[in-house]
Picture (spheres, rainbow, N blue to C red):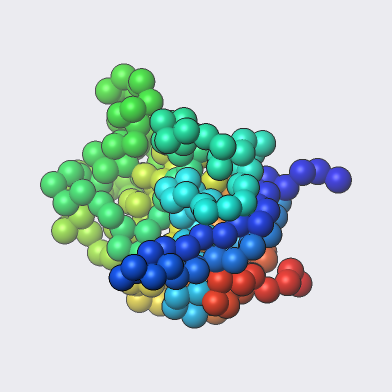
Amino acid sequence: MAEPFVKIRNLSKSYWRGGRQVPVLAGIDIDVAEGEFLALMGPSGSGKSTLLNLMAGIDNADTGTIEIGGVEITSLTEAELTAWRSDNVGFIFQFYNLVPVLTALENVELPLVLQGLSRKERKERAAFFLGLVNLSERTDHYPGQLSGGEQQRVAIARAMVTDPLLLVADEPTGDLDRRSAEEVLELMEKLNREFKKVIVMVTHDPKSAERAHVIRHLEKGYLNAAP
C-alpha cells in the first residue's frame, strides 16, 4: 500500500492567551493520499485553520509529526522550513492577499523572485498561469480594478506559479458571491484533476466541501473518524 502524501501523527497545538494556555488541537492523526482533494469543516474555533497552517509549515506544532511528500517538516530548522515552504506549498486565502500596487501579472510573478529565474522567464511563467485561470486579458490590471472572483483567480495563479506539491486554501470562497464561488471551485477541481495537485481546503460551506473527495470534521480540537 502506497504511503500517504500527507501523514500527520499525534499533532497537538496550544496558544497562550492572557497568561492561560488554550488547547487548539489535540492528538490529531490524519492521512491525505496522493492526488486527494480534502475539505476540513467545523465550527469557528475548532482548529481548522490552525491545522491548515501546520500542514503548510507556517506554524509550529507543540507535539507530533507532519510528513509531506516524504519530508518530515516538523524536524526542519526555520531556514529549512522557509525554503521547503517556498518550493512546495501554494496558498489561497479568503481575502486574496494581493499587493494593491502590483498588476495581476506582477502579483503572480512575485513568488518566483526567489526562484532564481530570469525576468523574462518569470513573466512568461506568470502569463501562462494567468491564462490558465482565464485572465490573460487582465494582466495589466491592478487588484482594485478586478472583481472579487477575478482577484481570487489571480491568487490561485500565484499559488500555482511555483508548481507546488500542495495547495492549501483557507475559506477560498468565503468572500465571493455564489457564481464567483462556483467558478473558483471548478478551477480548483481542474487543478486537482488535471495537474494532480493535492488540495487541503478549510470551509464552512457544505456546497464547497462537496467538491472535495474527502470531508473531515473538526470539533473542539478533535478530528472525527474517517468515513
